[in-house]
Length: 123
Image (tube, rainbow, N blue to C red; front, side, top):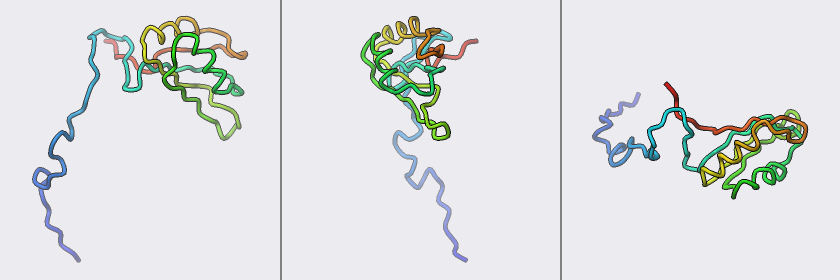
């Protein structure tokens, strides 16, 4: 049986420096509004047709501004795409325009639900 000497965490140096200090984004102190992530303004798009391709979604959402990132996952069980996607914009105005125009729109036979992926909690 080996005996190891227990060193208090404060003394072993593993947690020295900036560890545990988390970076937060600036806030405008409004309740319930959208939150910007490190990746930009991320929209959660649900109701996507399972046969939709990434290019279809890109073309539909690129009309509102440059897309920083687009994530459409593959559903291994059905062999098609997932019924949701994440679309990121660098500019808040572009993201809001996409929500205004695409939310409730018929897209490849399905009605889309589009909103910000991250929001500040309301009271």
